[in-house]
Image 1 (cartoon, rainbow, N blue to C red):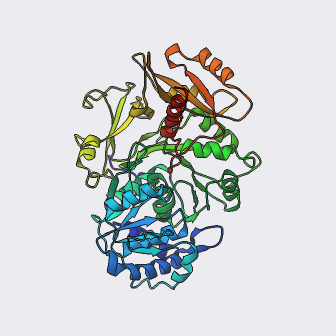
Image 2: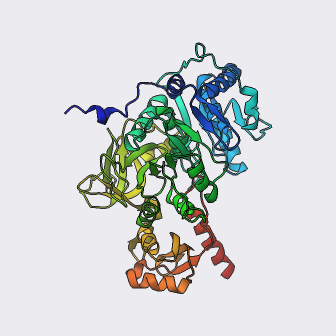
Image 3: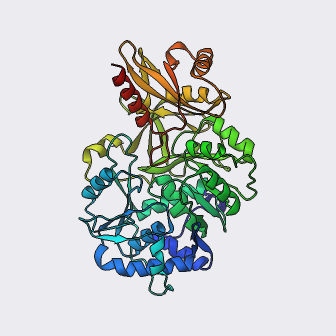
Length: 504
């Protein structure tokens, strides 16, 4: 059956990311493209700065990787597109990584140039920051600003999450990124004149979509906070007349709702609130909608392929789920033992996925590629179920399953319960080694009102089977976060191990 125009209006008529930028410039040259607290660039002004930097970079970078190490900023956006127009391969390295990690990533990348606000003595560096953009402000000549790239050229070298080890290079072609952009717009239907407020790092696949690529589709404006600070985000949502809040993981929404300014703020123009990066507890959905009147449209994806599923107005919303598969994408649940038996609706197993926007492999990591890509699918490492209507629900990360006396305990189930306690604002459950049980769950919680560990433990005892009960409840002021804005389970596990060593 042919698709209707409405179903197809998320398709784009470009082959490269640079062409998407040029299309936005031609469509809305005088519209605001990106702005910070200090100032902003219109689309034509940004094109002029990009052209100036492109001319500088072109002799050095054609066909070569270029490291881009900047915080979310106007400079990041200008540099990214300058690398593309110059024929380079942008490698997006998270500015928040510690120096030792950045140095290792650079050693593996063999970048011909590093564009950053930091100095790298042993490498060719091109200093750049928002303050230095003034040197690039020149009128654009659209007759000579042309994209010479092709659909098969690398549009971005992203890095996998890295919470279990050194991040791996994931090169994506222009064709794959355009497919990614289209599927994002299929899920979060945008309009002309949108104002986007991204929070996640542009180097993360979610932040890449919310701040770098998808605003271009209809020449939207990107307002960039100097940092993530909940009071600042609330002010910007109001003052900048934001229509799309690229919030990201649930921890971001929880922090914004915890701001003292949130309860009195009004967001009359806010229209779309995407969510992704980690499964959303039902409590977060309910509290956000009660406060704003808006749903969080939760989606699911990973650096290797994103988006995979999205809750949408047209295809439906199921709270607690990650939505339905995006177009031309196959999502299956397979058994944990062999990974080849496709399970029936409602059965939990590993999520595997394939689509036109999936990665082709990790650079120089054939062993890691073979672990992740099998039988034509990307194996996500996530546990989930699919219901009869096609909604995917993520139960947990495969690696996060806690094995208690032969029973599988999925942390998310315990976290969901903890978040129904009126005093609990955030929860993360991790496993701790136990000599008799193998492992036991330990719950870390943050509070919105007064409570103690005993009260919360008793609450769990009233609602959970014995083997799922947290052996301990630990109250913390705030959760540690990864550079991608997710709760850092590894840090919490390490804090338990350190505490155990001290008592030995």
